[in-house]
Amino acid sequence: MYDVIIIGSGPAGLTAGIYTARANLKTLCIAGNIWGGQLMQTTLVENYPGFPEGIQGPDLMLNMRKQAEKMGVEIIDQDVTRVDFSKLPHEVYVSDVSYESHATIIATGAEFKWLGFPNEQKLIGRGVSACATCDAAFFKDKKVVVVGGGDSAMEEALYLTKFASEVIVIHRRDVFRASHIMQERVRAHPKIKIMFNTVVTDVLGENKVEGIVTTTGNIVCDGLFVAIGHTPATKIFENQIKLDAKGYALREQEARGIFIAGDVHDHKYRQAITAAGYGCEAALDAERYLSENSQHGS
Amino acid sequence: MAVINLTKSDFDEKIKSGVTLVDFWATWCGPCRAAAPVIEEMSVEYAGKIVVGKVDVDAEGPLSQKFGVMSIPTIILFKDGVEVGRQVGFAGKQGYLDLLKKCTM
Image (cartoon, rainbow over all chains, first blue to last red; front, side):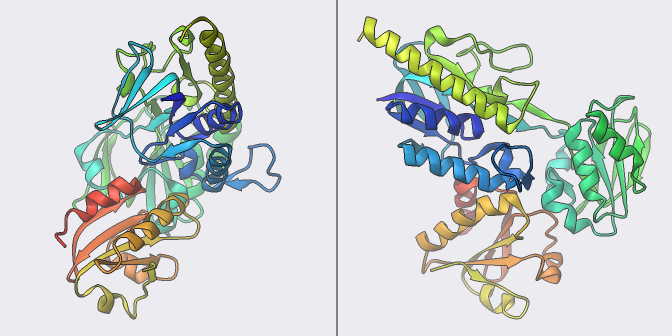
């Protein structure tokens, strides 16, 4: 039996763990088979306070994990398969193994969104990519397409210009939703071409990407970088917690001992530091909830 | 046994018999840093049963091209020198254990 189970191990989950364990609450963090969250896909993080020279995303997460473990958080690198919050204690399942808790912090974050064609999945790692910082170097002097209109699409496009000969940004609307400064950098870059009002409908190629099909015609290219955003990772919580129409978890569920932190709820800020802040809030709320409820019950 | 560094000169020799798991990686790749400790762990757990190697794609461009690696980390499973499966992107330990199942040892 745990006082707190935390599901997720990004900045929200690990910060929550640091706080609950430090408050002497017996804490289990079910980190996921692929632990650490979105920062594990990044390189230099320049806007997380406390690191004047910046810090590599994976290093930041490794530090947070070590800090949580040092405070006494038990961490298991497996995926939660099912939860039962209909009663107390809560039950959280990893395959057939069930873990029980008095309170649960949900910090599962958001999952990368693919375009969703069979050929796209087949060609991941063969020209289709979700990570320019990982893969840009394989596209030296090649022509690549970036799909998306947010800040991450702008970042991917700008990063790719270091290697690729030509970068085409394709967006389905007539304006980007990226921040002004990022848009300006993209528009001003001589290697980048922008196509608005265009939807990518398929990827061409057998063993590697050879081109794409769009609503305004086919484009020959060597790489396709997808950056159309994220969806909240709440599938396992359907019918267990309150979700909004887009699947984001709503925060007002504390009466049942359920606390929400990070990108699984937050579609507005989505920063490492805000996720960590939400993790702290959830931990303090859980701590208060547990102390109030132990006075009246059990 | 630790993960061995593979280069163009010894690659074919090292993978030609038995089961080999090869991690294509680079220093600048975030997810590769997540994968490295898991791969290291597997090289210890499966010591004597499989060979676990790594290829630095910066130093070994032609090797990466030969196997069509265009995204890292890419982990390729070989049996007697022939590719039997690959996992692109950090897949977590379970992902790599599943990959290993494609080979009977």
